[in-house]
Picture 1 (cartoon, helix red, strand yellow):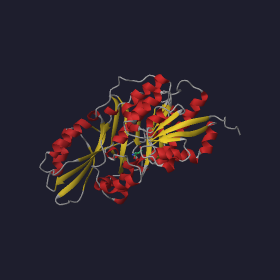
Picture 2 (cartoon, rainbow, N blue to C red):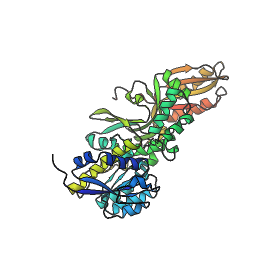
Picture 3 (cartoon, rainbow, N blue to C red):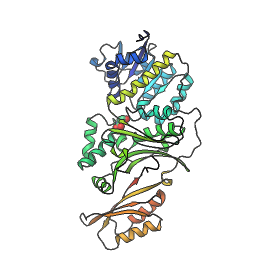
Picture 4 (cartoon, rainbow, N blue to C red):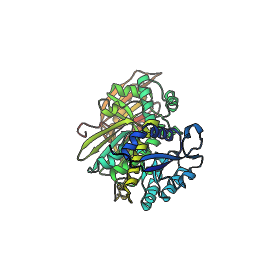
Length: 441
Ligand code: HSE
C-alpha cells in the first residue's frame, strides 16, 4: 500500500450545528479511510461556532465564535460553511474565496439565491465553491447530473427533495393524522429547517430545484422563476381519496424542458402508486432524471439529517483536497456544469403548464350538482377521467374528479366558475397529477 504523502491539508469549519457537527464527527470517525483515499491527511485546524461548546472542539488547534477569524486564517486551505442562513454566510464564503480558499457549503438558500454572484467570484479567483450537500442530503445528485449525465440533453427531472415534507406526508398517510400533528416530530428529529415554513411551504425544495434545474438545463440560477406551493392544504381525506384512485401524494420538485421554455415548480403531486418515487417514504429523498440518451435514472437515499448530509460535505472536501494536491490552478468542472449558460431561455409561467388534475369539490347534496360541474368543465374543454362521490359530511358531499391533461389557465377559470355555483359550499382543493408514464421511463 502506498503511504500517505505526509501532506496535511488544514480545514476550517464555520458553524457547528447539525451539519457542521456531523461533518466533524465523520472526519474523525473515518479519518483513516479518508487519508487513504486522498493520500494526505485532512486536519480540522480552526472552528468557529456561535454557541461554542468546549467539549466539541477538544484537540482542535484554534476555535472561537468569529467565522471571519477562520476566513482570515492563512493556514486554512479549505473552508466549510455550515452556518446556514444568508448573512453572514454570504460574506464568509465571498471573503474566503477572495482569500484564495476553496469552499464547501451546504447552504442551498444561498446557492439558489446568490450562487450566480458567488460562482463568478470563485471563477475569477481560481477557487472552487462546492455544494453537493445543498441538494438531497447524502445523495450525490449534483455529481450525477453534472458529471455522470453530462452527455445527455436532460428532458425533465422530478424529485422528492425535502425530507421533512416527505416525512410529514408519509406519517399523514400511514396514520391518517393531520399535518400539524407530525410537524413537531420532524423538528425533534433534526430534519426541519430553523424556520420550518421553508420546508412546509416548499421554499427549501424550491431552492434545491433551482440548483438542479441550472445544472440540468444550463440556465443561470433562477429562484425567482420557481413556482412554489406547500403541503399545509393537504388533508388526510385527500390522501385517502387519492389512494382509492390508485395514487399517492408526494411533494415534488419538477423541472421540465418544454416547447414553451423551462418549467420549474414545487407542489404536492398525485403520482401512481406503482411508480418507484411513490414508494420513497419518511425522510427519504429521490430524484428521477430523464436524459435523452440514457432514459430515466433514479437516485434515492436519505435527504436530511447530520450523518447523511455530512457524507456529501466530506465528499466535496475530498474532491477539493485532491484538487489542491494536484496543484490544479483552475477548477476542472464549471460549477453548474456548463461553460456557456443559456441566459435567454423563457421560464414558463405556472398558468401555461399542462397537467392532469385532482379536484376535491365540497358540494351540497342536491339534485343536478354533478351535471352543473361537468358542464362547466366541458365548457372549458376539460375532460373528466374519473369521478367518485363520497358520503355526505354535514350535508356536504365531497366530489372527487380526476381530469385528463389540461392547460392550467383553463382549469383555474373552471375552478372559479364551479366555486361560484350555489351548490358548492367551500373552496375546491386542486392537486396536480403527474403520471410519469412508463413510456417516459
Ligand atoms: N430541511 C431539509 C429537509 C434539510 O427536510 O430536507 C435538508 O436540506
